[in-house]
Image 1: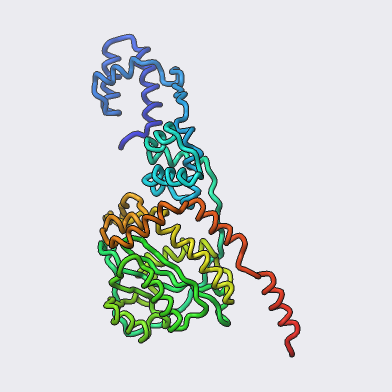
Image 2: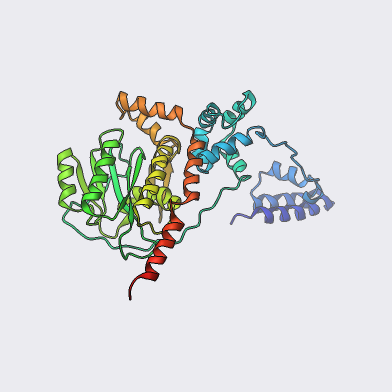
Length: 394
């Protein structure tokens, strides 16, 4: 059995004392042989260790090194805030480029020293510097599960290492405030499992025709031509309207297994990140609230697709009962589309123009202002509803 570091130090301190108090060569030889057998040291190294003073007598070594990259901390914090407080692994690859983008929009100041520090800082050091900052915590209640209907649509899942952009996962997110009674809003969420490009649209109710209209809107606004749709088993998706739509556009239409959310893992992650953590679990059930949600999503879609980096799994390895996953370098959905050569020249020019004209920090602030203000006439509408209930005949 290997000795722990603490046990080895205690043992060697005791043997040093015996060795240095020994009066004969034979006694010292016996001590050396014992140390070699117990600790496993080479004989010459054991003699060197035994001739050293006791460890407790050594003065502690202090490393008084000044902290580096202090001049770049304000720029790091501004970029961190602009990209919605990512971890160091996601922030590090885009740190310098985003800082320069913010500097172009006069959101922060850059000089040669700061630029040099941003380019030299390592990912681990960046993680330690981020611990100095505090990010706002969003606390939301747990969602309630909802049932899904089965249908006669092929069951399949995308491969985890799919490389062809245009494989979309689509889902609806309820905004019922915990009660399924009455008419309320939904968020239609779509994501490309390869590039991470995503779009959102709020609708009132989940009628098949209105959901199809918003799917068609998202399809027309997508930067390239999708080749497949994958949904859950809800009746808003599994219907003849959407089947005909997919046939018309040559799309592969598949669904996941009932009650198996991991079959739709990419869109479930976006539901959490870009819907629940943004607008929460409140009830929205009026046209004004739907319009307010779409105002947020119009800004959020651009902000997420152009500026927020994401990581993807590039390798899975089974080690006993665990699956070890390896991730690639964090890149934005726009960067992934450009790397895959998926965009035509017109779409590429349009998106690059947006990227250079928009400030991620300004978009973040606009989204936060809309969320903080709440949807229009919330208090007035609440008062009016209460009065109507009071005056309603019995």
